[in-house]
Image (cartoon, rainbow over all chains, first blue to last red; front, side, top):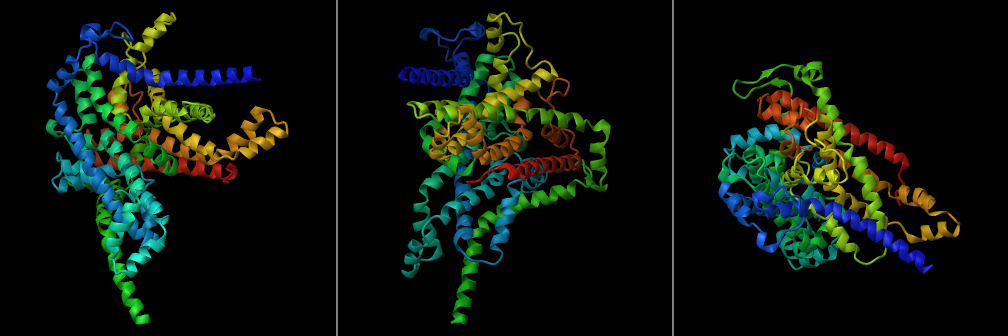
Length: 274
Length: 296
């Protein structure tokens, strides 16, 4: 009996380990390539002696294109989108969850319906709206369209509905305004949900490509993914440096994920948010 | 009393609108407005340099004419959707293994999830390197098995297959996580009862696990199809729609027409056709699933 069990256990671990190797190998291989000198790029080795590590690729990438600047751009854009989105969607989510006004259900339904419309339907008119505001080639053109989403409103509304009303009623009797209730009671009680939403919005904004690619052209303003495509077109078979560039774009999101894993896993399971 | 109540409700209404205002301005300006504008634009010819001309349904007629290439782009797009059934099958297998009460499962979950949070552009560049015909690690490994090098990105069919493989790899962790959560929701008593009735393990799988995972299947099918239909960045990086337009998808065509040929009306019409396709696919899956799914 125990023999069958250990054999079964072994089979499970073996399959999972094999799968993990397939998942991690592309990332590991690129990381190793990013540390090889261009002369060793094609040697097909999976390991590297410490003294042969070639950090120069990273320094080269930063010199070839303003990668340091791309990094800061990505950080600035992603943080701005996160703050604005969490703020505006928590305000509207509170209105949908708790306040009474005519047309509440209908407006909410319109919000939900737009979730189904693919981004490509809106980009063309959106481009002209941004142009009208003079935001082509500006951070604002990337940040503002991403700062208001129906999805954030929907997720936070669902969470606010689970907070017991009695807490608010008590504060209201003490004369607290609606805004004070939202700010001092609802938001502090929703910290886990706000954290989950923030991490998702941040990672998505960090990785976003299509819209920044269309709006931004000035090399000083590009976020990492767009900058990376410039590197890929200008230095197409410069693999060691390309991999260094890819690592610069990858690692921050991976670190955020590994640090805040718990929030992310719970969030996805609750909402399906991607 | 009614008077008082009324004035309070009235005040509440304005407070509610104040809460909604920031989001609703953005929503009207950047979401609902553009959706409606795009519908109107699809009826115009507009090259952004001259003023738009109303041309009725001509954009749509042109799209459905044989020379537009629409058929090929649609079939490329549908080919990319093959990543969904492939990815879901794999994900289900891994999710069931990860569900076993063994140590170290959290570690495996983390590893499988890494590609999900990775930048699609960085991933596409990495895969370009892995798939490189002369020096890519995949062909190096194949050579050790005495398999001739494959020109992964060099032929229309192989390029499509490469994009599918990369998509499966990138989204596997997400699919696993959803399946795992759904599997954890199935009560153990069902399996115990089936076990007592002498049902063999594959029957427990086909009669309990598969049907009770219904909502997860549906959710992953719909979101998977939608995101495979919207694939853009990886195609732009890996193949630029080629070779021979073999990976030229509908989204790629929309971008090309709008921002390379500046045919804004035509591109808007295409985007509505894309939306219609997504809508129909979603609806069909939903309807089909409704008859089969067991919500508990």
